[in-house]
Image 1 (tube, one colour):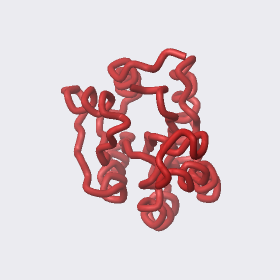
Image 2 (cartoon, rainbow, N blue to C red; image 1 turned 45 degrees about the vertical axis):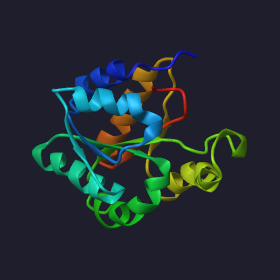
Image 3 (tube, one colour; image 1 turned 180 degrees about the vertical axis):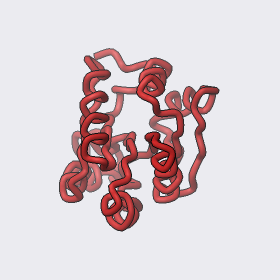
Length: 167
């Protein structure tokens, strides 16, 4: 499987009308972050925490646009309260681009990622957040399906990204 080039990924995201992204830097997405930061057509606002990023990325909704966050799954715990008390209850959609640390179990990552690596899909299911696993093959179709769900349900949705799928 050949990884998705960051420039190709961001061009596709922009083609779907998303040009505001906030997030917490993650070393596993270094090339993707570098591409995001250097893209003059995307407004990137770094955040100190995931909940701050979610708040910032929710603002485009009030201008009939969709914002996005980019985080690693260890930060999902910081999103539970703002998701349940703001985005979900008021139906404010945001695309959550989430690096999946701990995917595949202990042999694939450091110990601090093992539990959240296992629990990530369960947490999203518990919160009734639509999510899609990003695959290098036909990644555009997968993103479009998720964006359709986000738009139709007017809910946040998560794009889970395993290590090595996106540089």
